Figure 1 (cartoon, one colour):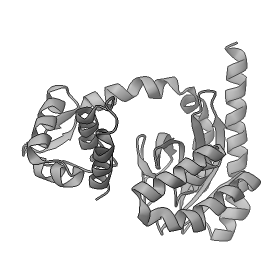
Figure 2 (cartoon, helix red, strand yellow; figure 1 turned 60 degrees about the vertical axis):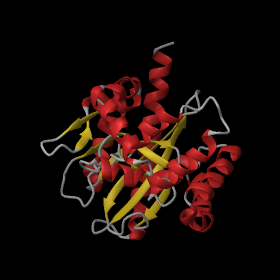
Figure 3 (cartoon, helix red, strand yellow; figure 1 turned 30 degrees about the horizontal axis):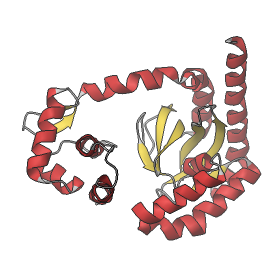
Figure 4 (cartoon, one colour; figure 1 turned 135 degrees about the horizontal axis):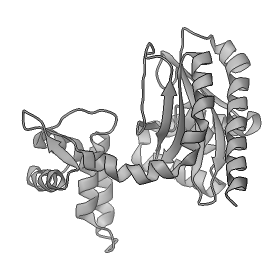
Length: 272
């Protein structure tokens, strides 16, 4: 499993770095199992998904529950606690682009009949920091905090197009080490599409991530601190043909990205 591989890989480097807090990392590995609505988990299941021993997991879940980051359900299984949400609030509230972009995102969602989101890189994945839709009658309804792989997605390619050459090389190296099953795909599909995104200003993914979803995305900007942001729309494949995604949706996505960047620029001028 992905979490087991991550824990095993991290453990191999723990001994070489005395500054690395292994127990803290293992606790975060436990929390990471719950990404994307994983539901409740027992200690045994958490041990299996992280590669950690049952006694270690028991100590970690007890501590995390005492601190409010986990809670027990009626069956004694663990779920995420409100402490996780409280920790995320300062980060989300500081991203002013979320509030400013919502009206524009809503308009695009109404046009496309899909879900419009703003994403940032999160290791080998992306994470949504804002998402908006006008209907739930779609095959995939993500929300803030949703994570998925950068490699097969339009928004992932848009984000990677903002990376420096060194950062992109580090990404490819990390994929080979941590997700070798994705390495060939990244070489054949992701890297050429990143170059195409830099040329055209947008990226598409036509059913590569999920067969029933077409994705179109555009890079937004790279902040002074290095944070990269992109905007995308996941559209049910029955609403538009692949040709329409390229011919009709992509130019509108470029317009959406330009409008959001303009709002950010105006806001920056106003706060000086």
